[in-house]
Amino acid sequence: MKVTLNRKKVAVIGGGITGLTAAFYLQKIAEQNNLPLDIILIESSLRLGGKIQTLRKDGFIIERGPESFLDYSKNVRELARDLDIEDQLIRNNEGKTYVAVGSGLYPIPNSLMFGGPLGVSSFMTSGLISLSGKLRAAGDLILPKKEVEDEPIGDFFRRRFGQEVVENLVEPLLAGTFAGDIDHLSIQAMFPHFYEIEKQHRSLIVGLKKESQSENKKVAESYETFHNGLATLIESLESHLQAKSIFKGVKVEKIEEENEQYKIHLNNMAPIKCDSVILTTPYNVAKDILKDFNILDELPKMNYSTIATVTMAFKRDENLLKKDAMTFFVSRNSNYAITTCTWCNHKWNNVAPEGYDLFRVYIGRLGDEAIVDLSDTDIEKTVLSDLQKSIGIMESPIFTVVSRWKQAMPQYAVGHESRMEKLKQSLTEEYPQIKLVGSSYDGISIPDCISQGKKAALEMIESIFEKQFI
Image 1 (tube, rainbow, N blue to C red):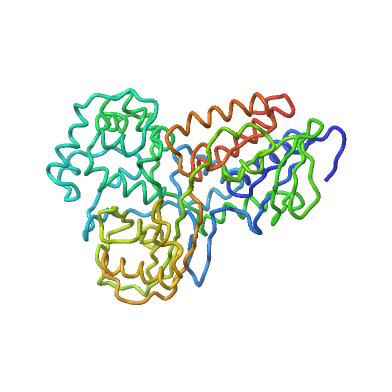
Image 2: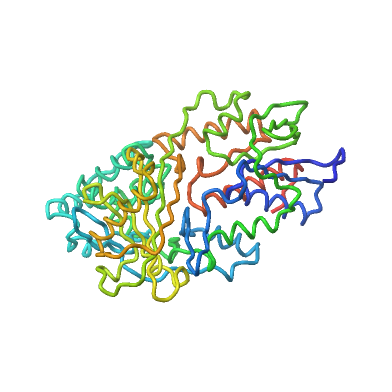
């Protein structure tokens, strides 16, 4: 790297989707404006991408981590356009969504998965909720709103719809997606949209219906991924970055201030000095890296849930049950150990060769992490038993891929928003050249992380050069 007295250096710590996006836009803006800026990306593992990891095997496309995204604000599409891979984006097929309660699978409106309204007619005729539960849920139409700054997701929806709807609908959908405990997760941090609807319309049912009729409502049309898997995004980002600026297998041990710069101590290299830092690691790791600073001392550690994804391939069986299913979520009141199951080749046309079925299952959630520590063989037996009970699979899988994610899913506890606002304010006032972004802070989805990475890059480069670029 060319280094002169006038050049500036930014270190991006963490090579997941947030860090890669930040590094890409730092480089892109610097090149477009001929800025004297060097960028380094430091990743502790030997591969980039974080939880995004695609296995391509014998014509199958297997996602070990997330398998798709809902791109409400087109953050992924804009990045794909900048990378010239927008033409590789694909949308999911249509199919039914079910919730498992007891030993049965009950269909739910697909509109719920894309931010649409809770259709009263379809809800009232569903066997998922008892008559008394439906009557209690209808109370949302007349109940007053509650003036509260934040509360657990479970409390919020129990207040609006009652316990049965929470147990049989809300908790399965959210636990299957975020592997979290709805009695600790923050409604304001995780689902600010619902929080605002109650403030604005009082009734969630009325508010969602009004929003669905509004031309300005942002609703994702479907799930999206890339034709050759989500790793397409990671591979493209890496290929666009200067190879000499990427350090893999290098762990950051701590950061110190030194002569108006930052000194980054590494486990297997000499320290690196830089002018600015974008830190995208999980919050608890960042807290340790910044132990010599005082900005995180008063904030508590964050909880993370542990999960595993289990992908199984089978020769196609035309006698399986629920052949219209795309996904089913699992209530705690069910007879299953799994939390979510996706019939991948129903959802996507490109993930399995003709004549084969591919199923992807989540196991584990906060409070039930022990199942993830079972052997691959025992996990396979558990999942196969649940697939037999739910959709009638009787054959052994052709192969099984088990991917464990320890302490992987950040849990935004009640008060998360106010804590993060306090942290951002402290950083701005005391350490303006350090930014904390990523799934631990302002959203855990792929689009959220891309948005954070891009915003951090723009704000940092404008701060360094004291000039607006967009």
